[in-house]
Length: 130
Image (cartoon, rainbow, N blue to C red; front, side, top):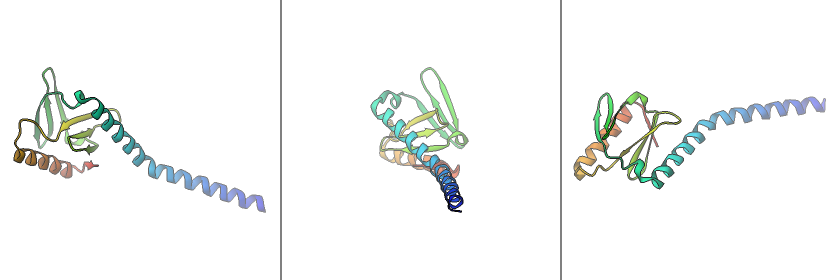
């Protein structure tokens, strides 16, 4: 009889541990991903300082670089992380886009409107911001 009680407790512990793992795994994974990209952006300014023309519209973001064009639809953005200087847009587990919060060619008032516009779209399309 004592062995049977032990098996029930062991099974219950394994079940609870598995449920707990799946409940917090997504959060821990996203946090690790955000921290890694922030560290990369901080240690390698060229990731952020690539000059481009950014167009913000209802359909998404259009980034025009010297030799390429990149269109991001709002639905492609899974998560946004931000620090004082940039937004990190997570498109997948392996693809991230970085945009500046304070473009050099804008006045203080324009920067404020630009950031408000981005946050409005993030909210409208239910994009989580951390």
